[in-house]
Amino acid sequence: MESSKGFDPIKPADITLTQSATAKSAEKLPWQKRPATYIVLIFSILLALFIIFALPLLIRPVETPTVIIEPQAIQLPSVKEAPFNDAQLSKARRAAQDTLSKILEKQSFLEKKNIRLWGERAFQAALDQAAEGDQFYRQRVFSEAQIAYQNALGQLTALEKRIPNELSERLAKGLEAITQGNATSAQQHYKLALAIDPNNSEASIGIKRAGTLGPVLLLLSQANSALEDKQLEQSQAIFREAQTLDVLHPAAINGVEKTTLLIKERDFNNAMSQGYRSLDNRQFNNASKAFNAALKLSPGHKGALSGLTQASNAAAQSMTRSQLANGAALESKEQWHKARDTYARILARDGSVMDARMGQIRSSTRADLSDSIKKILETPLRLASTGVYQHGQQLLADAQGIRSPGPQLKRQITQLEKTLKNAITPIPVELRSDSYTTVTLFKVGELGQFNQKYLSLKPGNYVVTGSRPGYRNIRVEFQVTSKGLSNPVEVSCWEPVS
Image 1 (cartoon, rainbow, N blue to C red):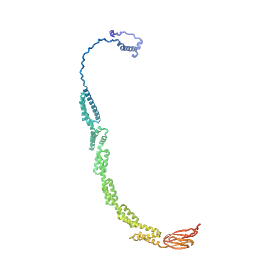
Image 2 (spheres, rainbow, N blue to C red):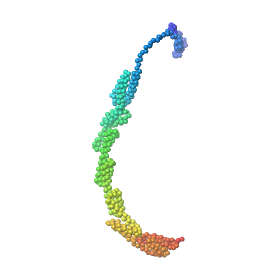
Image 3 (tube, rainbow, N blue to C red):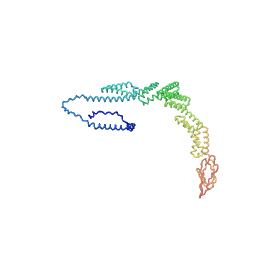
Image 4 (cartoon, rainbow, N blue to C red):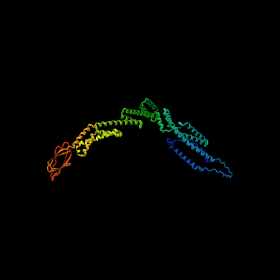
């Protein structure tokens, strides 16, 4: 290969070759399809194979003489490394890095809470402290960097802890601004609260309230003016309209409550006054209604309860007096049953009314007497019984013993006297038979056989029987009154026994 360097390069001859028709046509082909292109490609491949495989075999290594090294003393350089210090530095670096990671977390969290809107100065101071730590870190003074980072972390942590108080303070100041009627200030505080906590419902509501504060204040002014003019219902309606716009506004809430209380007090006082006026006018039902209306407005009110008691007592007394008068009137008309019922109603309400008690005894006695006399007059034949007749005589004596009897009792006495007299006055009775029948009259005795017989019998119910051998017995019931019998009593056994 070294001899090849002596060859002179072959220069191409400057000879003009005659081009054939084939060559001319070849010049018209693309260079990729020309024969020369293939020749060059083949040559290049062969040259590459020669360089890779044949050329290394033709080059011989240069022979060098063997060098013998004599042993001699070797001096090693002194070790300058400090593993412990390096470990301490590594440890300090890791601690600084850990603190820095926490700083970045705090920074990201605070920035999400829009720290620059409410704690810009303190936040920037903490970041400056962290930047000072970076300077120490670049100088590899990791302990100082750690101190600076810790200070920055402490400042950021303090800002993080301020968030609840800051949020509460903004909400409180927003509410205070609404109460004072400052819509602009309220919106600023509530917007800052939303910047800290975007999901805070109180802040969202506060912004809406601040937006309606103007109309609310106007309505409150109108409501207070109506209140000063004692137009309570109108004032209450306007306060309620304001509360509709802002259900939390304290002035609207207090206004509704105040007007409601004033209306209630007014209506209560009116009801009480009406109740006492009705009492004075002896309109006890109206008084009771008024006091009951007052009690609905103020349940358990002692004055209303006292008024209702007075009205009830007065009404009861008035009713008692009226019923006593009615009872006396009924007695004078000898309507003893109605009088007795009237007195009973009084006693059912108040058993201590002695006039009613006496009236009840009096009317009951007269009613019983009237009923007993009426019963005898309606069934005079019962007087045929000795016991009934004696009872009738006692009734007559009782009736005659009453002072100042009324017309009704006088008629009863007269009728009873006549009835008692008729009861013991004999009445002629005719009995007829067939001379073969043996006749027996109960309570009188056996009358024997006869065709016709006359007897004198007291009014009453009688039974007569007849018997005859070979014939069926006969039984006849008849009644004798003071008017006598219209027909004779027939007693004959005429049906043979088969």
